[in-house]
Length: 317
Image (cartoon, rainbow, N blue to C red; front, side, top):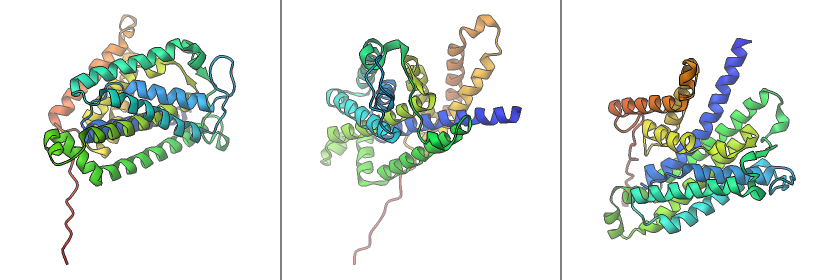
């Protein structure tokens, strides 16, 4: 019985790890490949989560909905809506330098959070959305449904990983990295810097929206607390830095390693005296911060650092 409980606990960790892997891959497209600093991950994650939940839930008098569409359509809608929001944000803010762009993206994420909390007609406010369906729900019931969802989410991670690898190795990816490394030189070489940065921002935001939608379908309930910036933005940045910015494999490894350790710190903090448990979230942040310091001292570029693709030469006939 204990082994069964441990197995399904591991399944739940791997499901959450898959969601974080998607977020890390999205951030790696934006920051690792394009050098675009996005500190508003939670806002795009929330946009995708609520978009997919609203599109797939049954009719309710408490919020907009009743579309009752398939989950795949809901996830596609999450990607499109988050991507459109990302495009709007990019058109306004993409010319800003990294630190100013970070402040602007934090502000926009907070605006999106306030809309979610205050527009009750749209999202049911702080009470949240319930009855969010799961994909492939007819294949299994009870705890076995988690295994089906685990396979579903990691299939999506695989697709996004292959897509990200293709982007990285493509001429588009090489141009993007040239802009990241030296924007002035890339511009002098004829690259449209603003266009490339907008594109990478939109693609990353769309993937973040899919991750948000999967989170809503996994828990089958969605409230503003599920989009806490500490659990989304802060943790995802730690994962990418630890795994290896600029490397898609490193993004996935960093997501899994940090999420396993974050889950382990929960077990540790639950054993603290009662007066310390109320501060457990801050203690966990401290432990993860110390871990990041250790990793970056041992591995300056992350666990799996970026490696430029091999140059391909074509022989002239």
